[in-house]
Image 1 (spheres, rainbow, N blue to C red):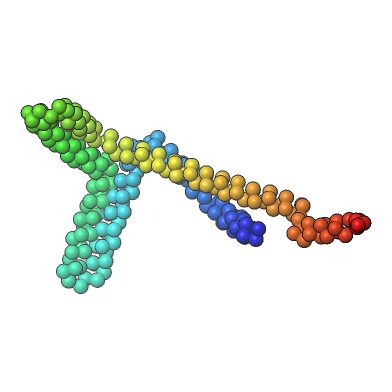
Image 2: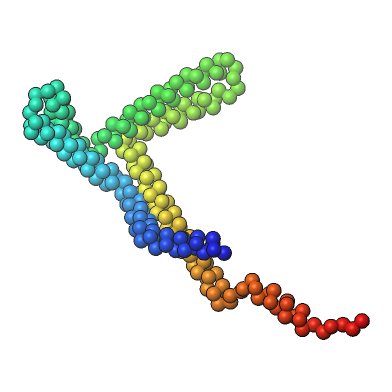
Length: 224
């Protein structure tokens, strides 16, 4: 009983500590996930603009550090060149927030198309060797080529799919946070109810023994 009481007290204290944080985290996660899922294109643009601004700021910090030190060392020169490159790259990403994802999508599409073409050639070799299910490899290659062409023609699709997937994951994370908080509240509520019942009707382990002794004392003696 004492072990359950200690566990219940710890659970109540834990609920008090994490209730607000978990509820806030669940709400923020669900809202952010819904925003990413509904407006994936805008989210991508905003994210890359922020990323470009951070790159430019880090480059400016490196250039400023070189100008302050002016030590003339090779490391300082590398810091100057790297900082200038980061500034240029950050400005380019900020002005063209969709281009990095587009280049990545096109590169993935080309790789998938090459893999699909290789699969088709492999299927021809399987057919010549008499393999009965060569057509399955041919079909897989054709599907891969189709996906690759879609990624090349619609380079924004991959980024939007990824952002929507991240949105779904965030929504699920928020729901699970709320579910965990609800479980904690239910556990604490059950513990409080059990404690109230035990307090209302206390049972002492000495009482049954006392009752038995009293009953034995009241029994009449039998005559031989």
